[in-house]
Length: 508
Image (cartoon, rainbow, N blue to C red; front, top):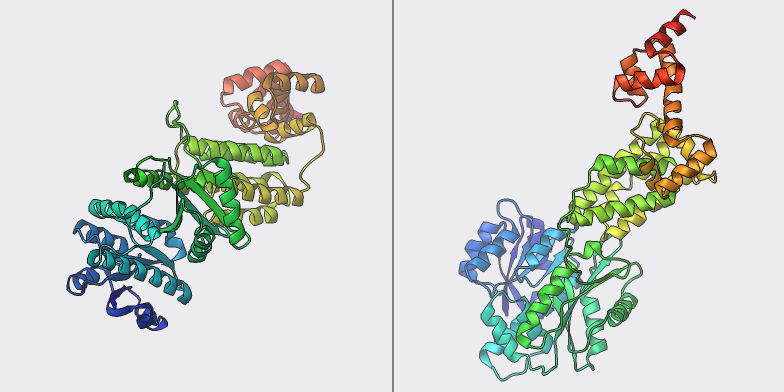
């Protein structure tokens, strides 16, 4: 029997795990429990369990800190299964980097737990056989797991010597499965069995478990087409709606370099958020221009608001795609990108009820999608979700106007004359070359863009002056930051100064 220690700060979970599993039947016995990380470390020295089942998030000392200390104390052989809630998944992924054996999502599924325990049992049995009977054959996928996931260089070398594969090259492919709105797939063990069973006849393919990933060691040439075929095969095995991501490390000639291929694939998978529609992560050349500027939420919110205001889903899509590109260029993390997108969306949509009567309920419905953004797996999914909801918003507001671009543009200017409008900005919104748009505008209105904008502003200024507003306030209200400039413009267009006009209208 192999000894198990259960570590969790909730007594109900400790007792529950002791009772829901037939430990004897699998080959384990629960030798001890601990209520926190510090107690676990103290008892570890005395019990020396073969396996620790440990909550990743505990008060005082987290499960991650326990694992770090075990590794620092050279206790590399300590096998660990971590327990984590869905919200802790990214945190739990860090623990996988310490060579833990896997993770189980709370609430723990009995069947899933027994599958994980049987897998760990096979690993422990293999280690026992290696230590006692060096001549006994060891399953090759277990050797690969030991070689790639062990934290000890000596153990890696030992496993490498046991890996009797005489191939021309070796390459690692990692596979991540995610269900629904980015939820980590709970069917990893099922997919491992199905994929393993389907490829047992292939002498140049080894399927193994790599923490939260499926791993494939192949001696065949990996191409984009072969990765796509593999992805389609995996999609067929998984429930509908499951997302499949693949990352391939470089092919190496020497078995001692397999770990390098694994690390390259793992590094690529860490960029899964930026995966395109194919779901395949490929290495990209380094950018010569270096890190980009961090996007400013206010500027992008203005652009998105204007795109929504002209009822153009095409313009909304362009703004979203350019925002995501800017986030990636600035090397923002997945969390920071989601936070920025949520902030931009909130700022942009919150302006609509003030400019479009009756849009409040539709805007609130659209804003309710923001929490969903944080559960999405990729940047592309963010664009699709936001575009879908904004499209529904525009339909509910009688969006998608069939008016000409020029009519939309003049209406837009009349609504936003007080903003810092530029022809170049409108050219981006309407997706035109600025020079060409300027010519179209003059043909349609008979006036240049700047002249038309000034006229709209000054017409509104007249109304405000007639109501007795002070000149400097009127200037700011209609979009002129400089009062003297406003004064000269007003006099040029009306032949009278703003103050004289106000007095004249007051006397009438």
